[in-house]
Image (cartoon, rainbow, N blue to C red):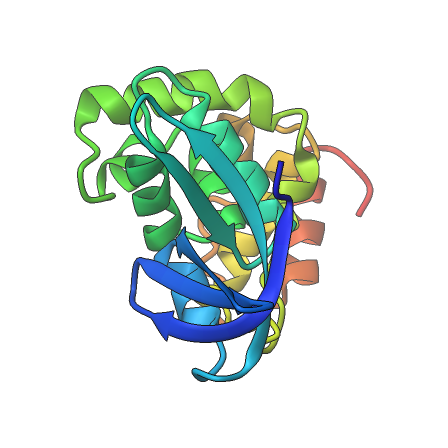
Length: 205
């Protein structure tokens, strides 16, 4: 099993990266998030990898972080979800955003992924929620700052971060929405929002 590759980036598209590792070119399927994180051609990069063996082909997939690879594993573990759809999810959202969408049962958010219809979105949320509850570190997973491997997930708002934090503490989506009802996050830090939310929930900040 190939767990990671370190080599020179020789080709890159929004969905494919080719690494030259000691003279051997490895082609890897990648998400849009990882594509945005890649350095310039000719520079060295490390990608965490996952190999999939099919009936007629062996495919390699590369990820900017170990957490993205873990989320990929969780996604393809859902019935009828293959690597292509899993990468589509990870191209639309960062790991922490996928975690938040699943835990909040945000059907509209999951359905916004290209190729994901309502039924598939429902199945993704239903089947992922239990497994992600055991991977709380994914709630705050981020991508490294710079191309060895870089890029950043889309910036989240303080309100989104506060929601993710409450969900990671074990509060239900309903409790989270109630606790933050009326706050838009403007001019407030995550810490301020959490303190107010915990007070509403009857807990000390």
